[in-house]
Length: 450
Image (cartoon, rainbow, N blue to C red; front, side, top):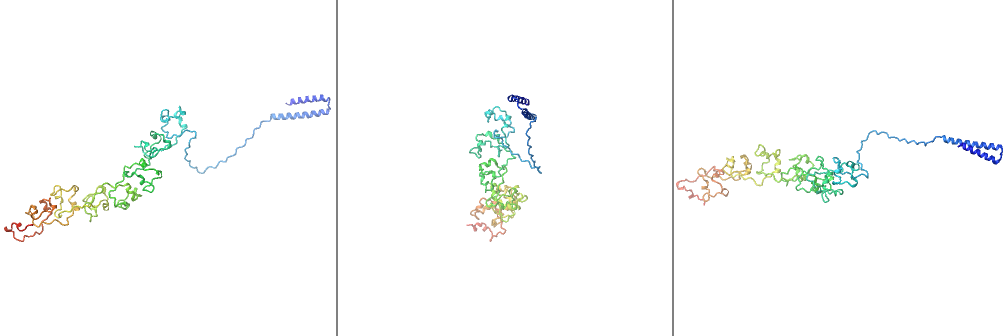
């Protein structure tokens, strides 16, 4: 570049010289000096620019980030919250996938849920790339399915528990594909501890302000839903073995220091809850067949080594408990028509092989000792025979109509052999106030009854 400038400059000077025709020498020298100086400055600038290195911008240093000091104690790692899939992901899998890895078994071209057209040809192992399964998505059944295989009986539009809108088109055979039965260990529905018969209206007792308030999770449920989950317990509460009328205050006897303490499980229960579970027995305790006056010590006769042993269910009961269940019979045992003296062996006459007719069926197994417990002597004993009995048999010869007098109605069916069983011979027999001679042999001549 510098050589070209010199050549142009020389040509210019030559042309100028021709035009001026010999300019002054001093002017020519000055002009030549200035021109060469300018040329040298231009050449120097060009060389500097050609040899100078290309400079790059100096990078700005990054700011220094101060790290926080380490925490003295490490906090526990929080439980991760399941993250929902992105909006463009496929719908959730509403059932567990364990044991169901072959998606095409149900979601194939000829099964119950065919895949859409844009899924044709996709393998089963590609399904969960878009469709995610959340644990616990389909809730477990809160009740057993035994005898409840027809789900639509309760889960329908007009059933006890209608299905949600998303389930309207589903059929019964699809229910158990998503909803599993809870194991017996995890089912929390307690058994009904009382009989259901006559107690179909559960909300009468199980409601707010009633005997047993429902838990918050049961609010709004109706009577029809109770027995869907709650089954009747195989062990039912014992029956009330005594009359309830007059014994409505159960805690008067059933308390810690009462006749029959309540078990620990019954501690918070009140009087009005007793009949909610315990029904009165259909068979009432037998009545007391003997007078109770002066007989408050029941165990004196009713014990294992006494007159009448107690049944096994009564062992350990005290005298005070007897009259709670057993009432005195309104019909008392008949009195004996004779005195006991000399007749202590009752079975001599009152038995199948005795002189009188056999005992009633209710008396089978009773002994001679038990007779006087119920049967007392009559207030007026039978009259004594005012004559000697020897040689005056049979009695009906005289004691008949037309002679001494007819027998009373109660003696109508009595025989001659029975007379001496009740009527004793008088200790003092009156004497005949006259001599009994042949003249007065026929007593009936004077002693007539009419």
